Image (tube, rainbow, N blue to C red; front, side, top):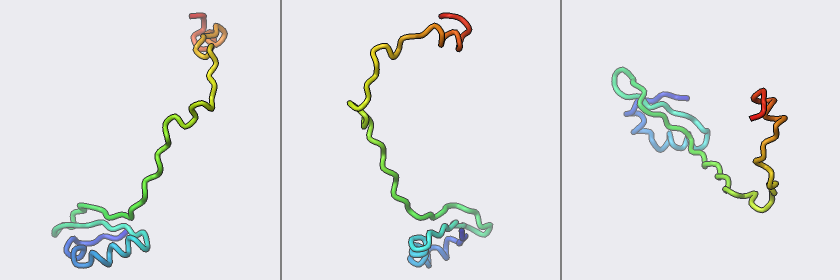
Length: 82
């Protein structure tokens, strides 16, 4: 990761972008006499593909009694039947 003053950044923008693209270099851009950090230039990454909602539709079968409560399980969780 390299730090660079805004003036130098403006003057060398093309070569900096080339370095970011080829080497994956990160740059912190500083501004003013106190070298206040104001921005960071990072390599671009393609976003990951989003998952398709409902991709398992028709492939799974949920039994009719799926939501039925079982007293034995309720006792394990709550200590008695609900």
